[in-house]
Length: 359
Image (tube, rainbow, N blue to C red; front, side):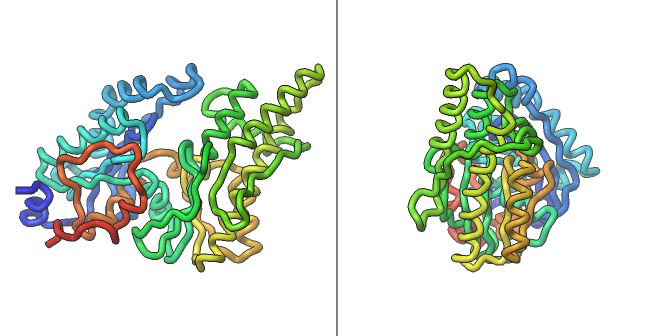
């Protein structure tokens, strides 16, 4: 018998989710009640390990996940004040992410699902970033989500709960990637985003850089040209034997990025009649972006939702929040689930899931 059907037929479904996140360089486990209440959220970061290489090394990331996953899960359950037997489902990031890293979490989640005889919920990483807002705010639909993370820059329309439609995406570098590449060019430590942000906020001057608007009606993004413009400024300054004003360059770079993000996000909100704008992903912790977006939303009278910094970066609590969308609809995942680095957000929508498992 299908494991998910058996779980639905034989077990009462309550609202406790044990969530696991291992998509990149954070190993995390959390216990979430009702999709909104964090009972525990344990995160082990590998930043210090990857810093020496200037970026995430996939093989090292996977190995570190293997070393710590069991301890992290045990700690999350202990901190929740509950036991594994209290859980109603196991949620895990299925994708996107590094395939080796994803597999570590998926194997752990499948093992727990089988051992405890409770449903498995393969969860979309970006859906997690979006629904991190649900842990601290009440989301009103339709809404627009601006997703800004290391590998993703997207505008996502949510017509209703768990119904995702991508209306704009990056055509090359994501915002986080652009920040890291510019930081490397300035010989700043990894991850580069916080260092660029700090320089930009403290700068008294700004070097004007181009904005990539693309087609007039496009909600897509492109930051590779901006990165090239930054490199051109660096090279020209050095060729002339001048001292580079790194802070002014960082501010110019950040102003270019934020102007495009803010302008397109607010335009999308108006066109699609969104009642709220949600800022999501690791780059949502960027002070310059938060300030610019907050100011524009106030002037345009658009409610803006932003999670606290601890819920912007990768964590399992956000995976538990997104997984609850499937739990309360009894839409579970079979045990033959595979890691999917290219998992589509739209296909993960609750409206697109078969309801046979709930019958």
